[in-house]
Image (cartoon, rainbow, N blue to C red; front, side, top):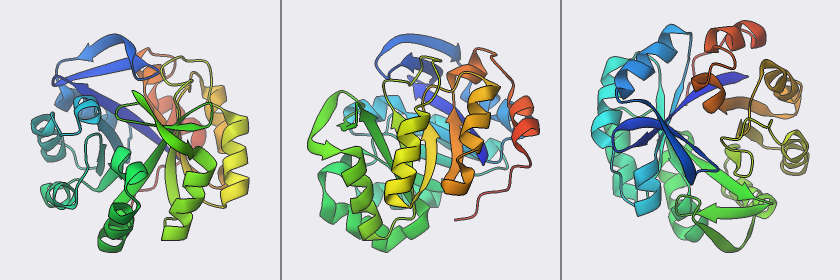
Length: 247
C-alpha cells in the first residue's frame, strides 16, 4: 500500500483546506521544496491538486507543477481543472505520470470513454463524495443523480481497474478515514481504491492496510503529515517498502 503525500496548490502555495472549502492554512510558499522533502522522506509518488483549477475548470498552477516534475525523481500525478483531451496530452508530455480526472469524468461519459481509450492507465478518476453523493467543480456542487457506488461501477464498465475515493466529510478534519464506506466500495465494485480523506494517525494507516487484500492500493495523506501527527518516514517504516508506480 503506497503512502502518497498530497500537495494542494492555491495561488502557487502549498495549502490545506477543511472539506475542500474552508479554513485555509498555508504550509509553504515553495512547492518544490515541499516535494523534495517528501521524496527525501521516502515518497514513491506525489499527488498534486490544483485547487484553483478544480474550482475554475482551468489549470492555474502549471508553473509550480512543471518545476516540481523537474526537481524530483519520483512520479507525479496531477488533478484539478483538467477537462479536455488536449490538456491531458499536454500534461503527459510535460512529464506528469498520471492525470487525475474529476468533474469532466462525472459530467461527460463520452469524454471519459474516449480518454480511457486514448490513455488507459495514464489517467485515473477521483470520486469525491459527500454522504455517498458525488461532488464536482472543486467540491462546490453535487452531480445530479450521481452516487459514488454507481459511478464506480460505471468506471468499471468502461475498463478502469482502480479509482481514488475521497470522503469529503472527512477531508482535512483529522477524524479518521471512512473505513466502513471504503470496505463497502471494495466489496461491491471489486476494484482497487486509493483512499483519501481523514487520516490522522498511524493507527488509521494500519486500518487501511488491513483492507489491502480487498483492494486498497494506496492512501493519500495531507494534513496529518503537514501538522506533524506522524512523519512520512514513520508511515513507510510501519507499512512497508514503497514500490515505484508503473502505469
